[in-house]
Image (cartoon, rainbow, N blue to C red; front, top):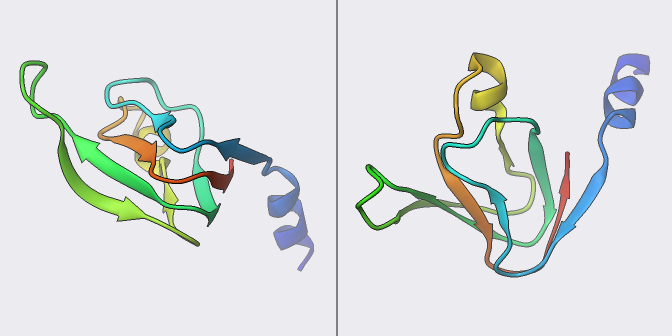
Length: 89
């Protein structure tokens, strides 16, 4: 239980308004997120000249952003708030 408390203590609550970009594809990863409230769209762009394609959604209890942290790679997708959101980072 103490380990769980230690883990929760390192998270901060962050608010994003509808339309805000939480993660931008290609950027360096600095944070991992867990959704408390709200919803977000996940999009990818195959190349700079192509349109973004929606590949998923994230809502309450979803987690994202771990791949760039685990592998030291650029963000693989863009994630935008489709409504006001509270995330834990």
